[in-house]
Amino acid sequence: MRARRRLLVANWKMSRTPSAAAALARALVAIPRPAQLDLAIAPSFPALDRVGAALAGTGITLAAQDVYVEKEGAFTGEVSASMLKDAGVALVLVGHSERRLFRGEREPDFARKMERLVEQGLAPVYCVGETRAERDAGRTADVLRSQLAALDGFSAPPSGLILAYEPVWAIGTGLPATPAMAAEVHARLRAELAARFGTGVAGSTRILYGGSVSPVSAPGLFAEEEVDGGLVGNASLVASDVAALLAAAAAPTTGAARA
Ligand code: 13P
Image 1 (spheres, rainbow, N blue to C red):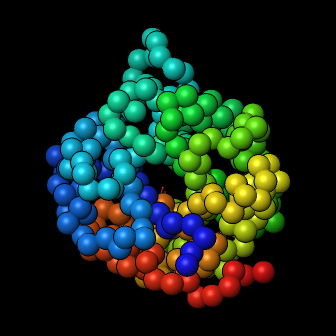
Image 2 (cartoon, rainbow, N blue to C red; image 1 turned 90 degrees about the vertical axis):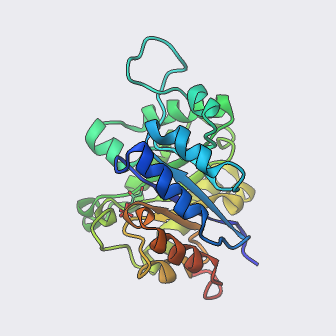
C-alpha cells in the first residue's frame, strides 16, 4: 500500500485550442483509470470551460496553468483565483520554469499566487527545478532550497499543496532525470518540507516528477516510492501515451525507498 495517492497532472501548455482541448479531454475520459490514481488536466485558460464540461462527473480534476498575484481589479489580461474557482478549477500550477524563464517570475510572485489560491481553497502545484548549468555546478540543493523560499511566509502549508520537481534540462528534451536522480531530489524536498512543516506534512505531501515523462521513462520513474506521480507536457497530449502513463503509475513500486 503506497503512502500517498499517485497523481498525474497533464500540462497542455499553449498547445490546444478550446475545441481541440475538449476533444482530447473526451479521449482521456474514455481511458479506463485505475481507482487508486488521480488525474488532473491543465488546459489553457480559454479551454477551461469546455474541458471542464468534458470532465464533469468523471472524477478527473480540472487544473489551471497559472493565476495572477492580485485578488481582483484593473489588471488587463490577468486571471484571478476566484475566476478559476468559479470555472471549476481545483488545482493550479505555480512557479513553472517557463514562467520563471519567459516571464521573469520569482519566489515573491509565487508566494503571492499561493496566498491567492489559499484564499479560494484552491491547491497549488508548486514547481521547482534546477538548470543544467546549476546541476553541473553542484548547486542543485541550493537552488531548490531557494525556490522553496516561496513557502517562507506560510506557517502551515497551503491547503492541498503538491510539489513538482521539474529539472529544467529535462523539460521537452526527451532526456528525463534517471529514477535515482528523481528519488534523491524528492527525498531532499521531503526533508525540506519536514523541516518547515513537520514530518506529518512531509509524509503526506505528494511530490511529482516532471520533465520528459513518457511511456518509455515512466515505468522506471514511477517505480520509485518517492515519486508520487508526474507533471507531464508532451506525452499528455497523446491519449495512448496517457493510458501508458496511468498503467505505469498504477504499478507497484520496486520496494523500499532509497536511502
Ligand atoms: P514535457 O513532459 O514535455 O517534458 O514537459 C514537462 C513540463 O514542463 C510539465 O509541466
